[in-house]
Amino acid sequence: MTVLVTGAAGFIGFHVATALLKRGERVIGVDNLNDYYDVALKQARLDGLARHDSFAFHRIDIADQAAMEGLAGTYPDITRVVHLAAQAGVRYSLTHPQAYIHANLEGHFAVLETCRRLDRLEHLVYASSSTVYSGITRLPFSIEERVDRPISLYAATKISGELMSYCYSHLYGLPMTGLRFFTAYGPWGRPDLSAYIFTRQILAGEPIQVFNHGDMKRDFTYIDDAVAGAVAALDRPPAARDGAAPHRLYNLGNHRSEPLMRFIQVIEKAVGRKAKIKLEPMQPGDAKETFADITASRRDLGFNPTTNIDEGIPKFVAWFRDYHGV
Image 1: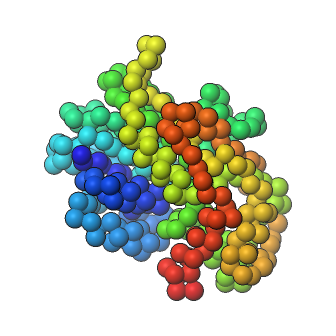
Image 2: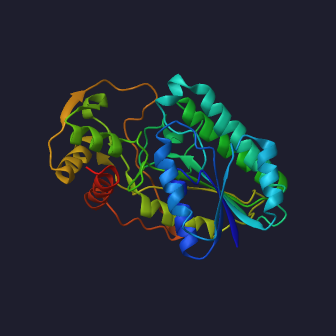
Image 3: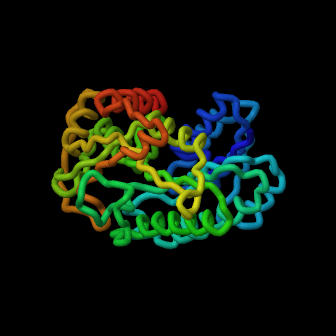
């Protein structure tokens, strides 16, 4: 089987591609290697993937329709697609909105158009985000909840991606699954995420910014659990039922909402130093709390997250020290 993985140089994309390669899949990776964060980290991930003979990489911007269709022509045997390329980050969307329109709307559209031209396509799995729930206060967040009041442009583009996907699934009968990831962390993580930021700053003796004066909670999902859910979803293409399109949505979270201050304490313990904390007000677009209802994911995907932050954070810190030579 040949699987196309977009965003292969990204955090989740790298780990998903690695999992697929280890079980004997042929993986075609796509990424534009933009400079949203350190390109050297992205290249290091790609170097790891390149050790597998069944991996091929193409540097392509997913919003480049012609390039994506050319890729599909080169690999007509692609049967499954894991679309993880996107512009992430709530705060960055406040200052660089065009990046989100380009990657998350134009890019998602180009991927959908490419997929409907793949004659052997069996399933498209794509990344959504827990931020789609950002205007909702009922916890835990259920996939049955209406998500039509986003409080950040990032969230709005992710909701739009879900709607576009449903439309294409309905029009062309394409099996699709959207995965709402909840704050993934772990080795090879993104430098713009809290685990990475806090670890780096604590080790450097720099103060860390703690928003909403620390009164926040997050459903932190260890990367191995998130990948297990993504691969399980890939193996289970949905069927049309009751007149609805073959399209499903699932939450991939740890089903545990951790206080931010406890999260910091766990990092402090793993690092072996106390943090210098600078309390700040809530940032525009941020959610106070996230908490995934994974009932449907457990039922349909066999999803069973097993790693809490007390286990996951030390693994991340160990990787951070090794990668940065700290």
